[in-house]
Image (tube, rainbow, N blue to C red; front, side):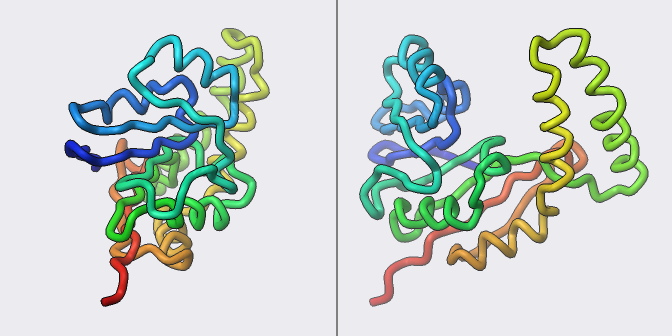
Amino acid sequence: MVNPQSGQTILDLAAGTGASSVAFLKPGVRVVAADFSNGMLEEGRKRHPEIEFVFADATALPFQEAEFDTVTISFGLRNVENTDLALSEMLRVLKPGGKLVVCEFSTIPNKFLHSLYRFYLKNLLPRISALVSKVPEAYSYLAESIDAWPKQADLAKLIEKVGYQSVGFRNQTFGIVAIHMGYKPQKAN
């Protein structure tokens, strides 16, 4: 989905400690990991000094217009309060022809598998998390936020509405996760 080339700049949003950003490190590629958790950013700086870590809110990005060749966000867009505004900001900081890649939980198209997965999220995951987690409420939030998130085609329409072109998505793991892609239009001649 993302194949960084020398000379390119990649912005990885909701990057936390940079675990997802590391995949983009190649010779000559500038990788910027952005998050609004200073604690996560500090830990990321310790772990990955070769990555540039920046405090940023996805709805008000502190970057120049047309600064990045690719913008990615993995499992973070669902947690942004204003999805339209965040997608618009990502579009603003992309270079013309630049690529957006969104990896997010999604809706399983198969009704039987979807029912099993919902049962797991609503009934089993909260019980398991109560046993092993110091913050079991986070797993209840996870289930609720996945339930409230748009289906794949609806998210693709939203991405198009904001102004991206050639928008598509690819289901992963039976549709538990989907990867959406879109491109900033080239400038008119």
